[in-house]
Amino acid sequence: MTALFQEKSKIWLSIIEYSLAAIPSNYLRYSFITAIKSILEKCNYLVSAESQNCKENLPNIQIFFQSIQTNNQVYQASMSRQIAADLSANIELKDWFIKTADFGDEYDRLLQHRDGEFTQLLEDIARYHQIFQQGYQKIILLRPSTYMGYDIQLTAAMQCLGYTKEQFQFIVVQPIKLYAFHKANQKIHPLPDLATEELISAIGMDALRWYSLRVPLTGVAPINISTAGQPDDSLYRVQSAHFRCCTVLQQAKQEIGAEVCPPLPIAEKLDSLLQAVPQILEHSANEIAPHLVVQHLEAISEICHQWLDSLSLTPPDYALLLATKQTIFDLLVNILNVTAPESSN
Image 1 (cartoon, rainbow, N blue to C red):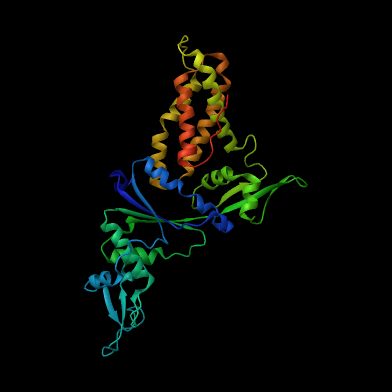
Image 2: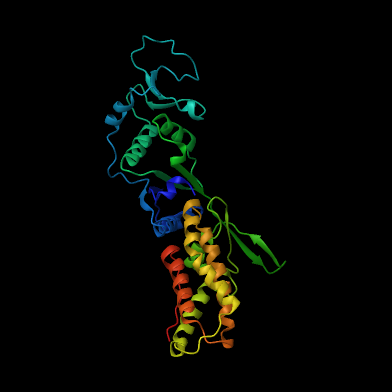
């Protein structure tokens, strides 16, 4: 765990917001990454999630630019140091550059053109400088797979201003990849992208969100639409574990106060998985890895099913049953924004 996270620092989370109704299919997975904010907040981090398109409280670019012109990492010249020496000392109008090449960039970058127009880089570093001045220690930028980013030049420019590259984390979220079972040859085959409405209709929003978060964000997320949401599917197993807990809890109320039986080894294993949830969430927050939460939920549900299958051998442990139900509900609903079915009886 890094020192920044150990201090429970304020984190600024940058997410480009899109309307799900109009989102391109290759952005679908990206639209579910708000789970990251929930995980960070669950671990008591102070998170501010803002859209990259938000124009509120933008800094005054002119004032910021004037404040950094005396920095020895900023200079005015006819062309950058990497192209040629400034041979035109008498030219009145020159561009303003920042020495990003000193921090791993290919060459120095423009901040202001000689006609006075500011560059996007200047606007971005002004914005991120303002964020750090507000007490944030880390900026996490989550971007869809179509993002062509400039993380090297941006972090290099911020290093020119005295910040460290460790204060930035760029994560490009890879898209989903659809597959289906082909009955003719009994094999799984890749599918072309489906329209958003068609995909949601085929597998449901819960399954789409679940499989979008089930693997690392930096890897492609495979979805088999032939089995997603079906019995023995991993999401179905987790949701049904919650449903069974709810049902057995209702039945177990009358057994509270019954003779306490020694816990089964499988119950002890389930309890250890529940106790590990805070550590899993912390690890997931540190690594920006919601798939760790999904994988732990799958492990809980599998042991839960085994335990519930064995309840005919002994009266149920009401406290463990309740803790299992509440843990599955919290991780599914409050973290991953996935439905947790409950018994209606």
